[in-house]
Image (cartoon, rainbow, N blue to C red; front, side, top):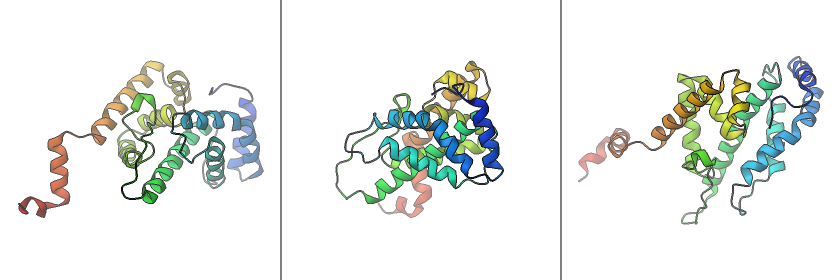
Length: 211
């Protein structure tokens, strides 16, 4: 996926029309960006087990449907559109993981689906994805740009160079943001044993007396 492929001016004009209330403009945006978004979805799904029920076309269609509901969004250019799409893709995958987790039968064998090779410790098909979504929400309260970096790299499939361009930062700055985010998220999802025990005690203070 490239932020500087064909029709950047047309995309910008369509985004402006959509922001002004022209719902037909979103259909034109979808046509102009569909191949990019479908490739992104296919890249994610190719890492999954064949038994997974999501399909690339369905994932992009879901993204498109959600975009049609975002009438209050102010998307000013193509970079803004893809950053916004990354955020929406995260929501779609989080919702899918939530539904899959709720529908999972007790004792059923689970198939681990790494979200991305760089963060293979996140299982995109189960509770890891839900924990990651919550952790990203917490990180966003501290540093929004670092969350956008994670979304563009791991949810939308941008390269580091493309994501840096979309965020309008240097490659070195993006690399630092991403490395910080990965370390922060890993510690959040995999706290030390002592910290895990302390959190459990906070949730169930009476449990420590039931010995």
